[in-house]
Length: 124
Image: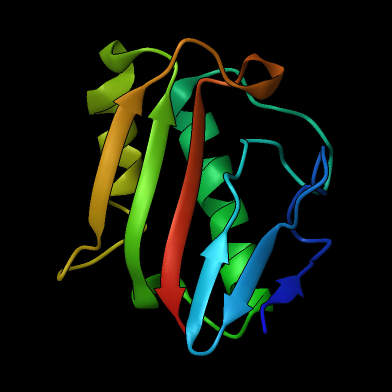
């Protein structure tokens, strides 16, 4: 049976969903917006937003007993694919080889008009 993950080190869900769930040895994070949990503020630049989203992913994973080095797959939603290179520069600082599988897509719009949202699947 799935179990919900909740932490105050990442922004609270803004709808009827969990920050993350676990099933067996797997952790699934919801899409993490680039809101800094301590302040509730969303940074402006793609680099700052990428860092904030990834820090929120890390917080949810750690609350579930996992970590960034156990991530198997990420899905990245960008509001503008022109931000791809700048996003990658930050993303690469959060992961080491072997890198997780990843999908990256441009979307028309993200909640709160964020520039990026990231979700992950990891082992515990």
